[in-house]
Image 1 (cartoon, one colour):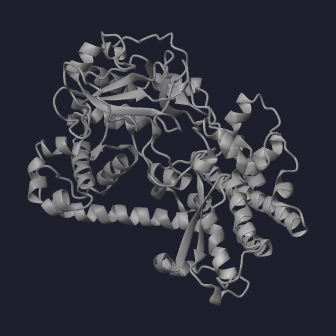
Image 2 (image 1 turned 180 degrees about the vertical axis):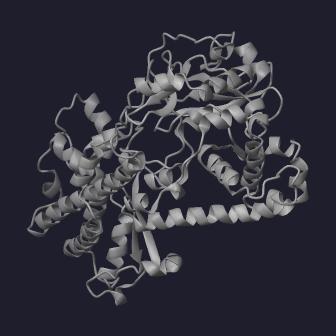
Image 3 (image 1 turned 135 degrees about the vertical axis):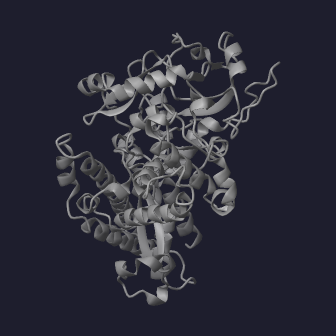
Length: 574
């Protein structure tokens, strides 16, 4: 189990691009606007360019710690005055329009988005007259997958994702048509004949930059932080509370001294995410001694119970569960004489600040890029919603689409999917999500049901061998669908920054996809070797755990639950 495919890479500061950005008028005007309106971020430097493409972000001017003793330090304070929200739109000079069209702006399932698209389009066409003009100029044009050309999309080597980009563009035009009829009714506010360009600018801004606390929020500077797998959290606090507590000692291990506008140099020890699974943590504590104490790999669970993992590949999930750092978000943040509470939605109330803090393991070293985490997203979602892909991305997954069928239809070969019938694929296709170093047992169960046709047939190792062999064949065919090999892709990626940035993202996407498939093929090959040994007379324990080494433990670790279940089924049917 090679964890280098999961550990984030650190992009160095691009000194040349940073120097250019620091002298650009749009950023100087933006920074003045932020500070004039009360935004506090003394521990951060912005703008700073990172990586070979000079992507703009922020870096830490001092150590911003996060430890068990000192876990949450506020480092960004954005006043509600500069935050764009549906509430602020409703209270604006065009707020009456939302009341006159309740179907779109009140009862529609995407009413919040419609309000933001409409309001930001209005503010955008005001240009210099808009209060938000410095912000709009600094963020520029947001990019989404629908902006990619046909040639660029083909670099993804994924027909389904290409289709989704077309669908994304189609939906954006649909939303525009829904609003264009309203734009045309209020020519005093929207004098232009066509607003497609300004609308698409607003649509992409909201899609790629808004925060969601029950309603969409566009938060200047907070949305300038780039994405990475870090622990940060955010909440809203009153100005009075922050003014008082910024001068007080730590409150419940929370530090808001940066609200004074002076960097709070801390002597607290730094703590950052290890990105180690429980096995690696256990081995580290054991000083990487050979695991001779184990009789089988699944027994290791008894020894891992006390190890908390921040990067356990076996525990990665697809759904939008709450971030670990927010488990205590309902704690009494202002449970003192002020008797205040954290607001989750009413961020536009007077004297409120959006506060971003380090999380349980969210510290940033001096000089390091300061990130936000947009969510536990795979590259498909990152490309679709934000226009970029990460490599590595420990939350990435491969979507494997299989035709819904029963054993009665199975002839020994899997039917092909007709892409021309894509509109109804939901009805005929079952989708499985394959992740790094995690056997998808539902994926294997799909083959089990169609290959082992009779449910009355008892479980056998030979039958399971047929199941994983068929799964292997499907994955090999999937690999053969790519026009390039992973080795060729990695050579092309090494040409960065001489290749366009979109091609870089496409290469990251397809390399990550291929790595996941290859990791599954490797696991299946290991299982086949084990099953053949069992068929030849060895016990399951001897077949997989004869070599009680760290190297073997790392190979078997992702298979521990599956092997345990297979052994149990074999025992029950013996």
